Image 1 (cartoon, rainbow, N blue to C red):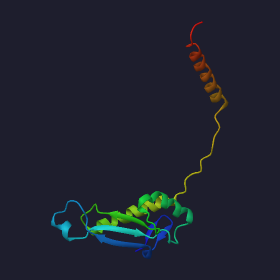
Image 2 (image 1 turned 45 degrees about the vertical axis):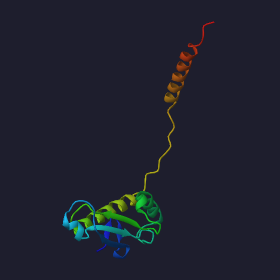
Image 3 (image 1 turned 90 degrees about the horizontal axis):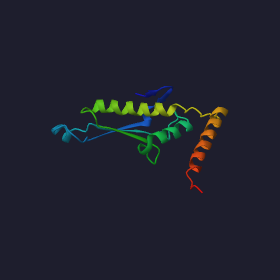
Image 4 (image 1 turned 180 degrees about the horizontal axis):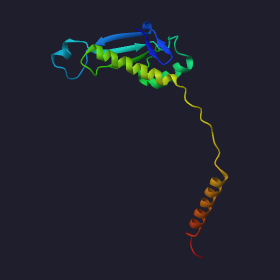
Length: 137
């Protein structure tokens, strides 16, 4: 089933799930059952994302972004395959959701005349204090 994130729908063909054995506690279960999920999202080829959104996703994904343009999410927290699959999909949705939001443009501001005057006065006073530290002639 497709994954909906805000206004974007990620289709099934863009997602690949692979199940591997998880590490950590679990007794005999951990040696027999492949419960960890490796969810792969082909982000670079996705028609659902704009180039700007793909660039933001690449920056946010960090080392989870592969050279061929896929985002790889690995989940092995739960002891069941179904729960790990849900966790991986939630993480991917959260990551894509953050990439969809364009950052607000910063507007440069000028310091007020009063703050500039106070800063210069403080510098002048500090300079006088330092000048008075010199040797007495």
